[in-house]
Length: 317
Ligand SMILES: Nc1nc2c(ncn2[C@@H]2O[C@H](COP(=O)(O)OP(=O)(O)O)[C@@H](O)[C@H]2O)c(=O)[nH]1
Ligand SMILES: [Mg+2]
Image (cartoon, rainbow, N blue to C red; front, side):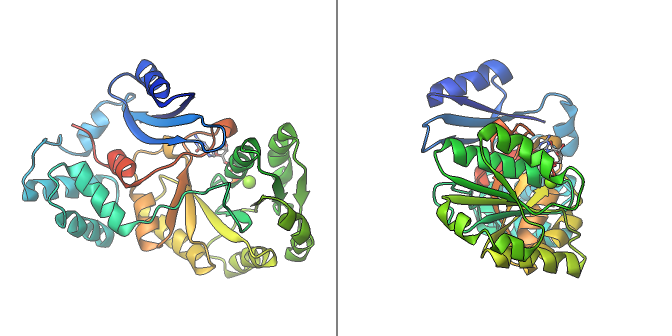
């Protein structure tokens, strides 16, 4: 699957860019108009590199399916995505509640029942955001994307990193903040971070990159929680799509246990099987904030909703 985000001054222009670049088979997965610079964003996906993939996943969807056929079809789809049995059954039961014949829309309804979507609003984010997750999850890129978005939306940004022990942990984020003309603060302890409370208070939004942690190491998790408590911050889990479903669920659960309520899904462009995301959200009980579909900081994060997620899960006919 190839995912891309396009921006233009008007929605028709953005759609035209999608059509010209990706063709008429592209699936629109999300659209938004930025409140601040009024740019129109469209994220679209296309199956191109392996056309047999979706066919391999499941039989082609028929436009009008009776409930039993639809259920059987969706069971095959969810199994192919690697969804563990309990959540698979839960989602299937929820699709039974809707009379919608289109399997993707029935899936959207089930996702809507089970998963909360709460995108980050850089204009209204009160608490400092601490980007947290396992090493390599995409925390630093997400921090940079949020900084750039907030900065270009005219917000004053406080940006810090607590990833002081790993070689290069600071430099990676500094490369972006320097371009934006932002000072990157480093804090190696919760007390040091607490020392910046006034600066955080003065800024419109505070973004704090943290060191990768092992979710199954209580000391690691307690240390992360202390950083968050030092500034009364929100732990925002960053989780790469595509990991094993139960592993993702356990990870989400561990972060939920220390107070995380939302997550950014990264590396959606590198992923075909979405059981990990679904299990993390459904079992870990964590809302989906945004998704990242490329490593380019300037492209920012994208929005996703039940319908666009359902279209990524259920193959189009
Ligand atoms: N393709 C792709 N790569 C990503 C995405 N997000 C992060 N990356 C890459 O994943 C790697 C790890 O990201 P990084 O932010 O350093 O992870 P961290 O260790 O959690 O801070 C880097 O090479 C990033 O460029 C994404 O959405 N798509
Ligand atoms: Mg990092």
